[in-house]
Length: 142
Image 1 (cartoon, helix red, strand yellow):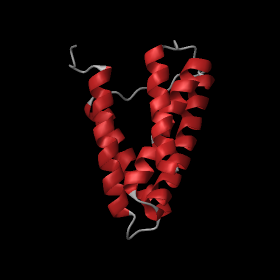
Image 2 (image 1 turned 90 degrees about the vertical axis):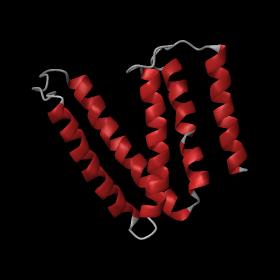
Image 3 (image 1 turned 60 degrees about the vertical axis):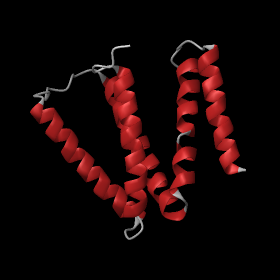
Image 4 (image 1 turned 135 degrees about the horizontal axis):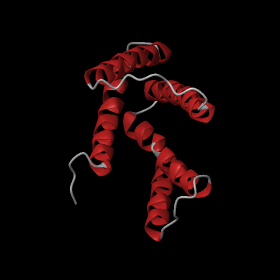
């Protein structure tokens, strides 16, 4: 499999960065209010994203009339913000070794939504993987 700029390589990089986010976030919220920590993180992300778009010369005029895309991106931003607020508060209250894995229950929820709402194929391998994620989360919760 060729990992050069593949979705698989990017997904692995995302997992590595998410792990670093959990550890750094846990240390960060030890001395800062979790809501303020989320705000600081959001400002940094905005700066990093603006830098990358600028360096890659990817600024473009928004498409007029694509209200579904805009609505979904805005809703995604709202749900991301709510997720981060909950995540940082959970990190402040609980052990990162429990919070981060439970947070990853989102993977199974995304798989279900992909199958039911987006019509993505349901495979035995995917169903087994999703079931293992849910099982692992239940083990941590019980």
